[in-house]
Length: 178
Image 1 (cartoon, helix red, strand yellow):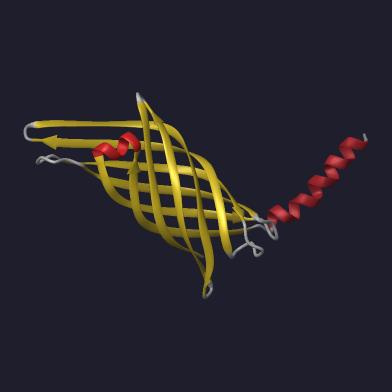
Image 2 (cartoon, rainbow, N blue to C red):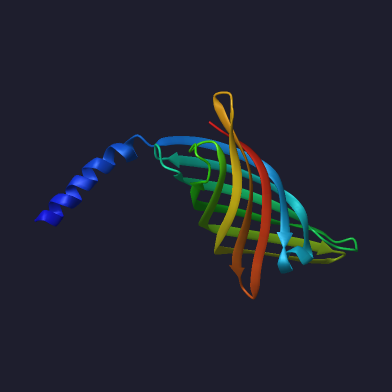
């Protein structure tokens, strides 16, 4: 009975903290750099992102849900054309490393689900394919104030385990949160 009372008491104390968590939104854009075997076939591209931020008050830990889109052009020494598009959605845990929760450096890690769609044409030969795979990411960034909004600069390493190998890339982005 004492354990039940303790669990109920802790739950009641946690409800106001969760209810008062600040929810914000963010957008970001930047460059994306393919790595590993993926980098042998694809050139640097662009990255865009929309985010929902959940920040419990006075805690250095936060949560973020990201929707991302990365696009890479085919790397070829001939007249080949094509692109690889990676659309993803993921959940991340952020840990602030500064003394102020919304200002300073942070690290983040998370898991996601990605759709990889690639196509290429060289002369009369065309190839395309699409697959859905889980993946993970880890990165670091810096947050700072920008009037009534916030801004951040961030880099993240994404790893997607694909059939017969992996897709790896690093987007480097600048964003705003509100």
